[in-house]
Amino acid sequence: MTPATLFGLCAAALIGVGLYGLIVNPHPLRKIVSFNVIGSGVFLMFGTIARRAAAAGLGGDPVPQALLITGIVVAFSATALAVALVLRLFETTGSLSLAADADDP
Amino acid sequence: MITPVDIGIAILLLGLAVWTAFARAAFAAVAGFIAYGLLLALVWVRLNAHDVALTEAAIGGGLTGALLISAAARMRRIEQATNTERTGLPVRLLAIAASAGVALALSVCVLVLPDPAPSLAHPTVLNQEATGVGNPVTAVLLAFRAIDTLLEAIVLLIALIGVWSLAPERAWGGRPGPRQVADPNGKLAWLARVLAPIGLVAGFYVFWVGADFPGGKFQGATIIASMWLLAQMAGLAEVPPIGRTWLRVGLVAGPLIFIAIGLAGTVTAGAFLAYPVPFAKPLIIAIEMALLPTLVLVLGLLLAGTPAQELSK
Amino acid sequence: MKLAFDLWTFATISAGAFFFLAGTVGLLRFPDTPTRLHALTKADNLGLGLVVLGLLPQADGVLAGIKLVCIWLLVLLAASSVSQLIAATVRRGGGPR
Image 1 (cartoon, rainbow over the protein chains, first blue to last red):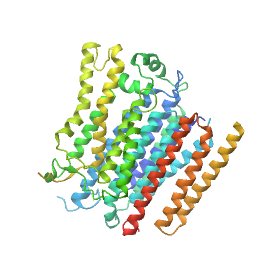
Image 2 (cartoon, rainbow over the protein chains, first blue to last red):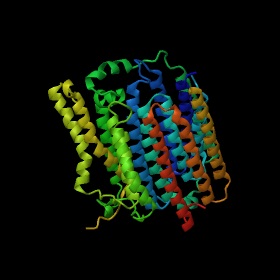
Image 3 (tube, chains in turn cyan, brown, green):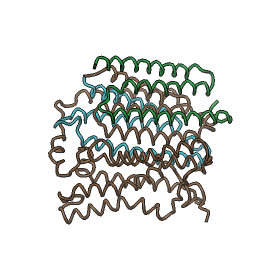
Image 4 (cartoon, chains in turn green, red, yellow):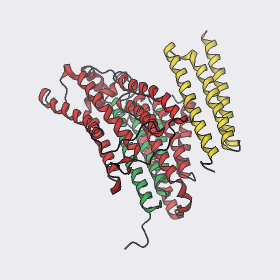
């Protein structure tokens, strides 16, 4: 088993753990953290594919690595927008619950 | 092949991920997530993806961690009082089944990947000479897949517009975030005064050396933006109100120059974002230098958050 | 000569690892925040310093060695400032219980 395969399997497990955290935690910020764990698992799996495609004297395929850099930056911008939304929800309603209001028509 | 260090890092990574899912308080989960991000950077080094390792450490661990920690700290006070929701057992069982199923399916996919793996390394190396950059990842980012980098910068701007649009009516055009109350002569200010010049030099170095070695504008811009944020937190610099003209010009200038160079390429080299070969390296450097201030501003403002203070005339 | 370098690296990194272990045990076992900060600074200063000292013979060239020492100095700077800030906050009465 190569390191790439080991980290690929690790990535699959990370996606599973992140999915569990996303579904089970009611706190919105922890859902964002679990979503980031899923995202990093997906990136790690892509990195495994990049490592396995090493050729031409390079240590890894540069095209997936460039796509990964783009992906990490875009994931950060999505996280920033999500955190801004959660903070605004906290400021306007004073609570952290995502559950629908019972007395809304 | 596999060293004990690899196995140790993989076990730690999974342990930290489980910690973020199961920790009692949100703050503890976020602290675990920051450690997880930094450990992931080590994994990238092990997978020979050095540029990705720098990006993960800077943006994935550093900026995302700072964002989440400040949000968790602001919400910590009321978390105990309002956190009365508990997910029921049926949902938990369903979640375990779903995550186990997904993890299993993906593990099977990893194990049946084609061998030998299809690769784009050869075409990249063959065509890299014409671009004049020594780092193949930079060549891909700025020459072969330049449209991805352009759209990435625009996505960052759209996210920033989204964050700004959450401002309440009275704070429209005002300063982001709560007012900082740091002492300009205190310890944090001392740290900012000592660290900021070092950080600026390191950031510019990482940006400049990205042409031939691992590095690049995203990593360098993150370091410079972090120094700006440190100065803001220490009370040595004020967050600019988002209505300022120079701020908005600075945000838009980078992508505009990128698009202009791309449109010039339709005339001189036959396609959008194509570079005429003798000018490839200068054009790439021009694009990077134009994007750097925009990226520093965007990353700093995304961390600063939604405008919350009124703009006092 | 290489054997001597390798022995030096092994010995100093083992000592550094011991200090990291001691710092972690202190973090888990000490009763309140200032004492825990005290344990952590031992790990940062001594532990990381010994690890860097052990890696110096393995570096390729003087410049790489200087970079390693600069990394240690930057970690010292950041860790000591943050420890002071945390301790000042706890003394004022803020922070988690």
